[in-house]
Image 1 (cartoon, rainbow, N blue to C red):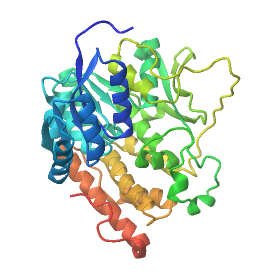
Image 2 (image 1 turned 90 degrees about the vertical axis):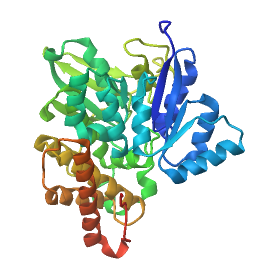
Image 3 (image 1 turned 120 degrees about the vertical axis):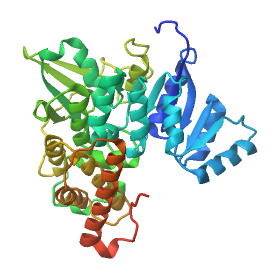
Length: 406
């Protein structure tokens, strides 16, 4: 049962994505505890318009002026009360840092969510972090800002949320290892030779989770787990060698923490993102489960196995990048996003994702990044290199401007 407090207003960065819609489900469950200050989306204005009609935010933000005109037209046609409307990066930052905002859910996929999340942390907002790229690309900056402001940064990703819960069982200095679980994706039992013929449709058929396209492909390559290793190092101050990945196809155990005495604490719950979302929103309290609980009366077997680093080389690249430090992880993220888009477009084969990332890591010099602007410039540079790599290797399939970012 939640304590009776005034309503906390949320700014939801990425309201039309899978995390965003699940967050709104949680808000529906607790109308006396949570409300919406701002809904921030990209170009899915049809869904955003429906969300505005239901949740009546004070502010709504979209990607650009074109999307803004479309949204305004839809709202007028449906006689929906018009919130304050905005578009672009500055409007995202204003929504995330507004005095009225008591909780920011960072769920924009990619580095587009970095600046608004960073500014929210600087302003000592309580942030639920569901955007991996924030820490993968800008971890040093964000964590320095958190240290200076004292902001709360609560992980929403199921594995890090599970780790956050496990770490409550003891003192941080008593911890010896963090173990993150991976489903193994759809190709856990597929041979390395067969991966060359994998189609986007097969790669998008995740066995456990329903997620956006990029994160689903990243799960198929285990890049997603590599990003989580990087995140965990920043969030919980772990060295890379103290974060282990284990494949757990049933996806019931989300994270485990090993303590110095050999005890291992595991976090277990249903595979539904509303669980970690609600935990982040209500922490340190625990509210009634937002989804059906696990049924312990039914027989079940859980299995664990080590990941295949040869078949899924991106996981190893992530460990190498976070160990290298500096801008290496930002390049890793940018190159992966370009390569995933090219694969989904049928322009490179599935193993080409890892090949593209590996070559980009070799070509883009590692440097220290001291501002968000430098992170964004490095991101653009890495994307340009990734496009060049793809063009050189699979040029006959590549059209000018693939995955380009202005």
